[in-house]
Image (cartoon, helix red, strand yellow):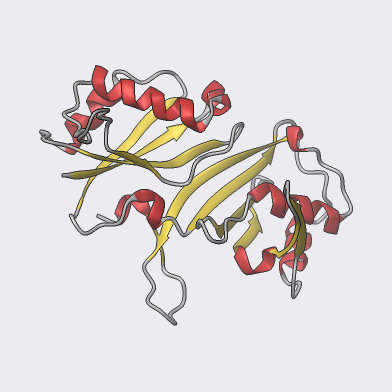
Length: 232
């Protein structure tokens, strides 16, 4: 059977990269005595798939991992067993049994929501709500992305579905997180700071991924984003 695990990654664990996180879960599944299915061949490995990998330094309460099992008692038993072998900064939030036809987590990702807040104090932007509204109302938000081989100009506006300020002075946004049009929240915030005329270095604020979504809308329909945990 296929199972989708939602987990949180925060505190000091935000500095652990994706590959090390994956290795940790491989060992945690063995320690928790989860009856995980292995691939066949000369080098068997656990059948495991993560959704959108999290950047180093970003906290999250919406991380997802799919695994295949040979057997299990119940989702709650599995959640409890895994949390007993977790370390501080990693927490299993839910376990969901997936239907056989469900796409894996990585292929299902369409969008992600984020919260950005200053590590100390509040954002030094007068009328934050009004500035964000004016920023989003632009017809286009061009961003120049440099790679090793080329320089690409992107229109971020196409991948920003929502952006606003919260009552606590933080900035929230819902952006494209698919493999074909992934928008990093730091890119959006960099352009907002330029628009607002302020300089806020990346180390001064914290990015938190709140949730990861799939899109259940049909062709030609408006987006219908649903958390990956609810797909099953």
